[in-house]
Length: 457
Image 1: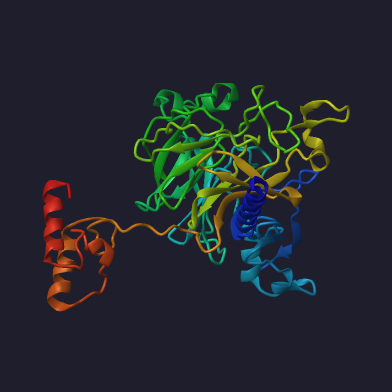
Image 2: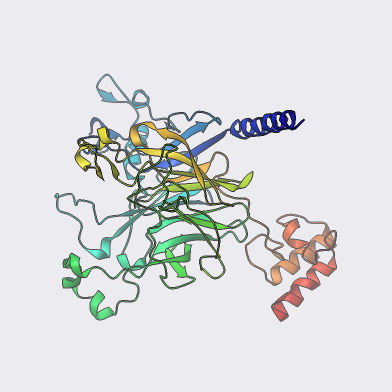
């Protein structure tokens, strides 16, 4: 009798597993980087546009999507698509606006973070490893970050000029995300130069000496005002982990992965283990967004090692316990030509897989991950989200009857106007029903006034 029961149980488990694997998802993202052997990025020079006085390129950067059907992963494809024939044919430009739109994607490079808020994609690019037009390298810390804003639906660059911010603005992050509980943008920001005195910050010799520029104060959870690009720290820069991702799920829980680089050789299942047989590699951390502190947990490591380079992660609102992670295949180690496990050389990255990338699925309840698929041509996103879920559904703020994101006397007024005149224009029904009883009544207006007087519900 035991054997049939075991067979039935195994059959049920297999069916459950196949059902789970059959669930597909469309992932979208902002292209981060792809490397060729000669360090080029695969741009195509179209020609010099005399009307625009600009060289026009078709570049890998842009908005992409890819399909995971539960078994296979499609190649990332540009969406919206860029077609040269739409703006150039027979050796001449036929649509200058389209040509400019296409070449502008070379600036969509969020190597220091990216986020979507109110339909606008904001990308932050670190300029420390960028060249000036004359070929010299950017060394001035007053011009550290270039911020650009984009229409997330069309990919239009919303301003021709970059917004430039200094290093001490501290807007480099391991990632940013919107918290559905309060609608604010949070991030895991790298706090550099934050506590240096003006006597040092104003000394040009300090920034000329790279060895002296080693005052990192760690990572901190912060909110950010995207209009001013100003962060508000919830804690000082407390953490020195090599964080590579930051994401918030539909429940408002915040998670980050570190690189988990290790010298361990992967086992046959592709995962890495320590000498005790426990999973090692990248670790998943959960943050309390109220305190900014890492929460205590007993999660295992993911089992995969990655690299200390910015990667991307996101959640589907339908499954807050599953995090998608687009990251590196290894931590830069592998078997060399002599069969030894050593650092892999940059110059052979196309052949040795040093910068190969993969799509992973991380179970946030356990911390363990599984590699879903490898990505050809080492694609990597600086920001990733589930199609149609660019921004989370933000919970209504209690008492915010007019939907302006705050609770004030205007909220009580709009409720009274609605009750007296039946005018529902601009009324946020969920926020207005703040006494938590059924329906909107004068008690809701009274509850708001009481809240404003006593600062508590």
